[in-house]
Length: 120
Image 1: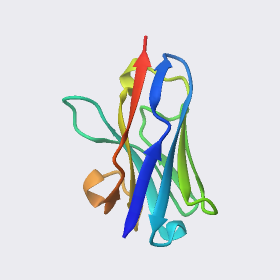
Image 2: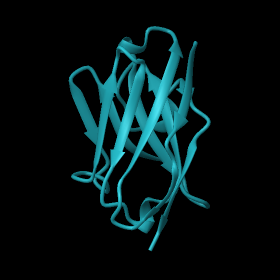
Image 3: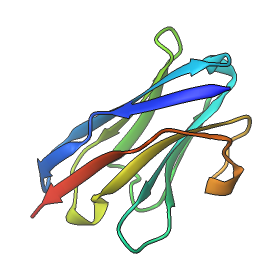
Image 4: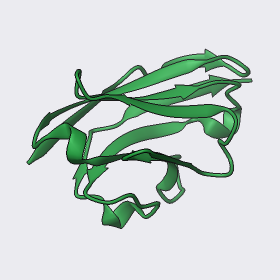
């Protein structure tokens, strides 16, 4: 079992930065691939970024603006979001899986989500 707890969401002005954190406990963190997804009202949950081994993967909509990193010593994965747009507003979820994937259904464990609101 893996437990995931996100934090760092909030209200930010368009163009500003925000950093999300996801603290993991349970099964060995370093062996997991970690992903960030988001879901806006009335929309499907969509892939944002993932980190697995030495690889990082990003949705086209966030490339160049978002950076995913992990600190295995702290069992934490981060999502640094820069140049935020109103379209980035959503509930952001952290997820864990054995392999890297952009498909939400492939992930075994999920956090409760953290709200990101971007004002224009």
